[in-house]
Length: 346
Image (cartoon, rainbow, N blue to C red; front, side, top):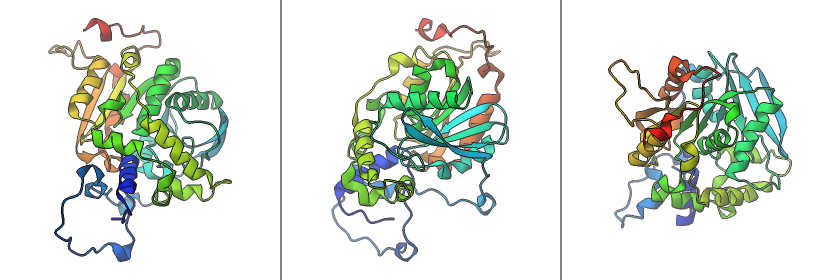
C-alpha cells in the first residue's frame, strides 16, 4: 500500500475512494512491509489501507477492446473526450471520480458485444482537460445530454458508477426525454445517505492533496494537459462539489424510465438507504403476484463480496446490466405514459 503522509491526505484518499477510485498500487520494492508495531489504533475513518485492492486483470483480459472511434466533442465550454465501442443500441458509460475509460474495460468489453458503448471522461478527468468552468452536479447532467445531441443520438441508456452514477441521475432528472433506461451503480440519491466516513472524506479533497492525488489515473493524465497546473484547481472544484449537500429524492419519484440500482454488499451506502432509494422508484412496495403481473420497472441488484472500493473489478456487474437491458419488462413501448404507480403505491 502507498504511504500517506498525514491524516488529512488519508482523508482525501477516502474521498477519492468514495468516488469509486481504486487504491493506487505500491511500488514493487515497497510491497513487502515489515510487521506492524503495536501502537494505538488510528481513527477508522482514516483507514483506506484496510480496503481490498482491485484484483489484477487476468491474462485473458490483458488486451482490452479497441474503440471504433475516439474523439473530443465541444460540450458546454469543454472538450469532452469519448470513445465508442461495439454497435447496437447506444449506452453511455460514465466513470467514477478520478478514474478514466482505461479502468472500465472490465465492463466496457462485455457490454460492447451487444451494444454501442459510448464511454466518456467527464470534466477534468483523463483526456477531458479542466477549464475555468465551475463544476456542479447539474452541469454534469447537462454535459451528458449535450454529448448525445452532438452525436445525434436522440435517446440512450445511461450507466454511471459512483461519481458517474450521480451524473447519470442528474441527466435523467434534467433530460428525461434523452434517457431510455438508467443504471445507477454505487451512488445514493442524497448526500446524507453515504456512510459518515465517506461524506467526511469527500469533503476533504482539495489542492492540498495534489501530490497524493497525482497517483490517480486522472492525476497521471493531467501531466499531458496543455495546462497541467489546472489539476490542483480541479481538486478544489471536485472537493467543493463533493462536499455540497444534495437530496434528489423528490425528483427520483418522478422518473418515468426504468431504473436499475446496483450496489455491493459492503458498499459505502448502508443497505437501509439502498432499500429506501429502491422504494422511491416504486420497487419492493407490494407483492408482485405469483405470475409476476405486478413487477415494477425498478430493479435492484446487490452483488456479494465487494466494497465500494473494488466494485469496478466485478465481472458480475456487466452481466447484471446486460440481463436488465434485455428484459422485455424494461422495454416499455415508446408511447407508454409515465409510470403513475410510483406515487400511487404509497
